[in-house]
Length: 146
Image 1 (tube, rainbow, N blue to C red):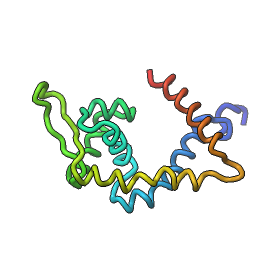
Image 2 (tube, rainbow, N blue to C red):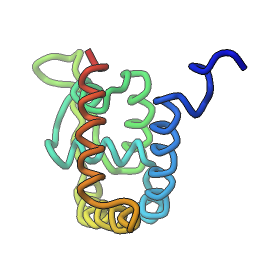
Image 3 (cartoon, rainbow, N blue to C red):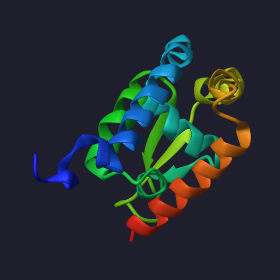
Image 4 (tube, one colour):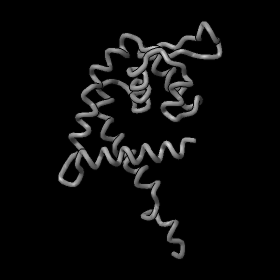
């Protein structure tokens, strides 16, 4: 093959994609125990940090489109995890708020990051390396998310 730039092993995107999928797979048993999906977990993390935010604030934090996040929010509302309500000041805005169930999930979810890190750290992967990789990925995300 004459196109070295098209070999899978030469791509930056593939290891990032594969690592993301495999890490999410590690999350799955913990999230299944909570009855939520990984995208729902991301929404919850935004709300646990700052409750009662607009849909647009959630989409901006998660770097997702509104048409991607809306079905996730609808499912979460049907599960009783969040509520959605039109803003009284601006009817175009929808405010998303944690329900009691959503607040209670935070306590159950609090141990997930520690469990995942413990599963990743080994002789070949250390905490410092993971933190450096996270910083590098955040730099790339910041650059690309213009």
